[in-house]
Length: 243
Length: 243
Image 1: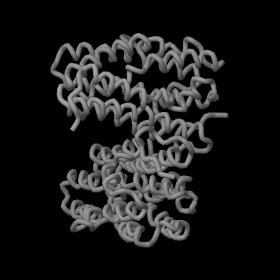
Image 2: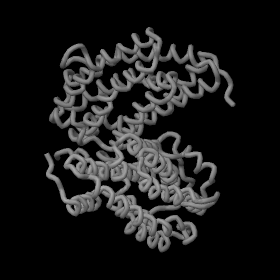
Image 3: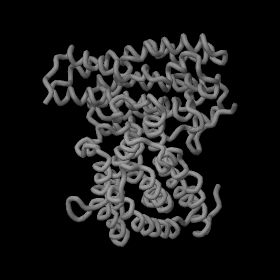
Image 4: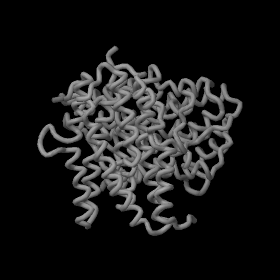
């Protein structure tokens, strides 16, 4: 039986969990940001991460579809705007495609998701279903990895611009937008779970939801590392970089 | 647009797909059967595979729950009997626990699934949901990996008995039962899809379902290889073998 935490204690536990399990600690990111990957490996990362990006609005819409609170729906709707934009070519998904374009990947191939690692698909789909099927509080809490995003994004942009001649500021436009969007979203979600998690069980569920989401992110990088950093492990049917 | 295949052609395509994508080709199995793993690595395999075993009756019950055909329900019910037995201690799941017991893993820890790799969970859960949510024909077709099981099981039993002093015939009892169960199940499912897939679209869906299931199995071995064969990659919270 866990003790009831104060809202401040809950926040501290959430931040501690992020410090231990957020994917900024994954070795794939050290390689990516440190310029240790070749263009094909960066392509594999961008291709697989596109699948994640493409599922985020489905996840956010699933959350909106579950709440009777207009204020929460309005706030969460901004995430749809951020990802889908107001017109074709706008929004985060389009900005992600600018990155895959810049890396020389065929847009139709990227959008088809044909070359995506099955492990990416399983992890991302597990996240969408978690939001659909678990409690609304857990669904909100699973978004809290955004709390830890600004640091990794700043490191990524600086590291990739400095280390790869096939990357420029235009292709990394996605991340510039996220630097303001992620903290705004994270602050809202954090206030929400601190206010609504009023029993020890709810607080443990919130912590477990963030842990689950960290696993979703970590597993995607494990799969990328195994397939594209360790030699000879691309699974059948997945993207094979041209050397 | 794909051409309509004869039942024999469909079977040939299914067998070809298995020859290309079934996990007998995965390097983890070569290490496992060839005696190249240490006890901790074999423990990690058995622990993670237990999670798969434990979800199989849920998958089979989900399939039974979707068909109005008493003959199909009766036939498929045998799979529940095979896995769950008729009494405590009987059935395939209990035989799998005899293996994890023999490997020195705490039974409560195994059953809790606490140390299971998140990637295992994502892949296995994707399989259960596939059977729940896709067409009944695709659900049946996704079981067809059993067609390819007897060879790998025979190799596994012979290889593990010859190569590991911590393995004996008693701990491998699970596989002996599967040597008769798997072909019976596979023959039934193969007849079923050959009879019921009557349009090119249905036949392509059957092939895609088998491909999906091969991905589910392959991704589990990728995750094991990455975490426990490649050094230093156990994800946060997952089982750590004692050296």
